[in-house]
Length: 208
Image (cartoon, rainbow, N blue to C red; front, top):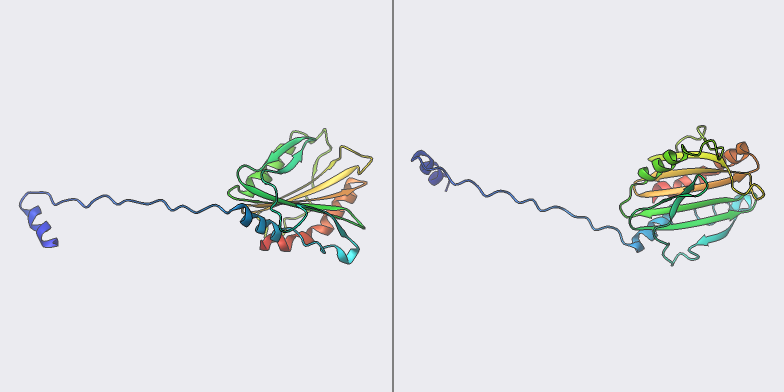
């Protein structure tokens, strides 16, 4: 066939052009809520994470591992009420420990939302309420190893009778985001507590 084409070209007749190639776009199915739920369960710290210091789980949301976490939950509430939501399908799980100290973690496993966008959204959004809520970035807290995106800050709470200050750490990795919250009577105390407990949450999160 190659010889026929060559002869036709020499005779003044253009050789037939090959048909244009057709590219079939490759599509990847998004993870199901059940799959996202398994990832969220793997990412959250285990119930006995603080057993060595007398910490016990007070609440789990959802209550059991068999239940699938809620979709479209608030990732963060900043500036006293501004909510940052997940866009698209997601599964959220949270856990509250009490004992020597009170610590809260919430994890969102997202189908196609990058955690970096949400972490940046928290940082950018807080710029509008730095003075009104005594917001201060916790620069002394370094990004944990294995985490892609990280931001930590402290602020005065809305209910000083319960706890005057709270400090927050947001960790992002791919389509997974985690929020850890610690409370304290002073900003310095809450920040020190957050720094001491954050390493407990990292291993599960970076392996999920």
